[in-house]
Image 1 (cartoon, rainbow, N blue to C red):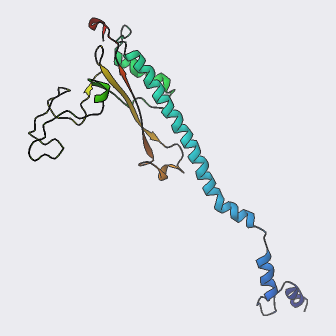
Image 2: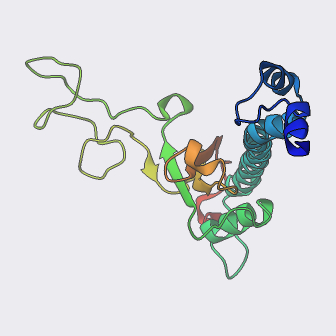
Image 3: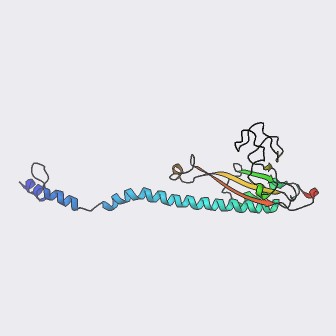
Length: 212
């Protein structure tokens, strides 16, 4: 009898069925809601925080890349190189010292392209569009070999650091590995984002014999 009364006080009938009052009491209960809400919100909050950290790191790396490239270009335009070194090696050392170890220079791609003028940067080599005229270079059509490699190129830039008075485009590119595994599957390719910085300068008119 005592167990039966206890069950009735809890809202349960002796046969195990729940009284409507117990159901209403359960629906009004708010205990544990905070834990449930946290369980749903925490993953989203974590992804947002990791995304902010990743974005901040990428902005820092991009700034350091561009700063290092500008510093290297300021040296490169003089045509000078320290004794026992080359212009290219000194330029690479300058970039590496500016990125404070955040970029592995062994995997970074650093290129130098020489152009006749600033307006020619990224432009294709001129060609004669034959019949039918389709706006693109086709094999056999005449072209001006600006970079002297014997083939038509969609970018006329010639590899090198250039001579006195020439325009040079410095570029450094790296595949940035996402630092947090939470964000990596959401962006880029295989958890990597291609980051690139470029700067174009004109070399100073140094005497040819002083170049290196």
